[in-house]
Image (tube, rainbow, N blue to C red; front, side, top):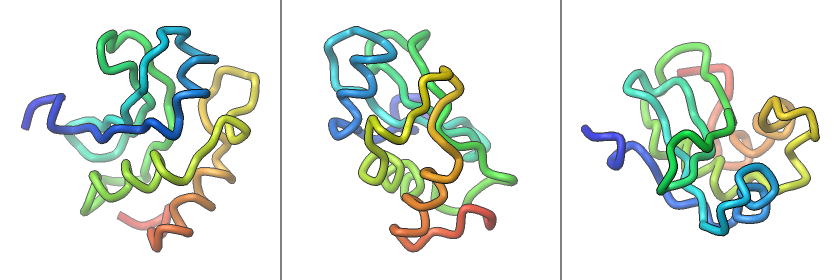
Length: 104
């Protein structure tokens, strides 16, 4: 599976991408080979990335988690620290999608 296959569109997070990346493009949510590390990424410049969620272990359905993050987070969920999305808000977004953030 290529890196392009490990991402979902995240147009709902365009405002966040504009704030952090200033590229003027809709971002994607991508994940690593292990299915643990999820990031907001500029689709044309992979150096522009922001951590959204790191699972305690590989998740069974990383695309489902990425989609939940893409649809369940908003710009207000990102504190101005540059550390990524608020863990509490990420957990709420995942739970709203029926995903336990503490389980693979």
